[in-house]
Image 1 (cartoon, one colour):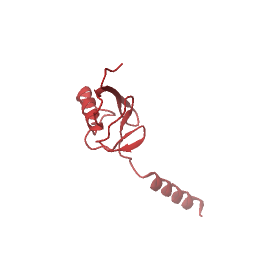
Image 2 (tube, rainbow, N blue to C red):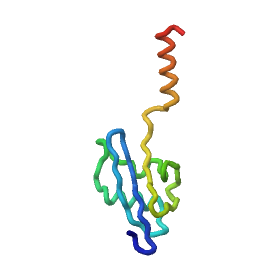
Image 3 (cartoon, one colour):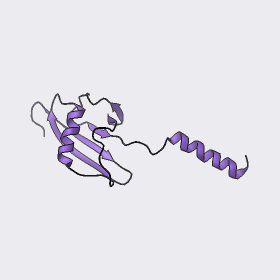
Image 4 (cartoon, rainbow, N blue to C red):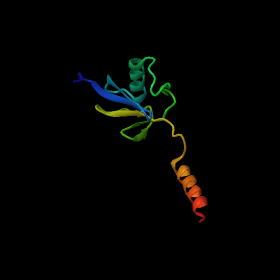
Length: 106
């Protein structure tokens, strides 16, 4: 349980093979940037999926909604660091369709 004037949030980062969660307790007025900094201190030099965690560069959000780092999360919010996609899903689908058409002769 958090004390008066405090809130607890979870910071999450995942790769294809691994997910990490860090629970941080913050002042009520803390921002996403401050939550990330607190999680970074807890994580230390930890890596996920063999790579560094992009604390400063990754887009961030709360429960799947993109947010600015100046946003103030509520008590219980899940703050997520998003990794870049390997490629655009729409482009991958176009390539599959083109390959399929070449093999079927359409």
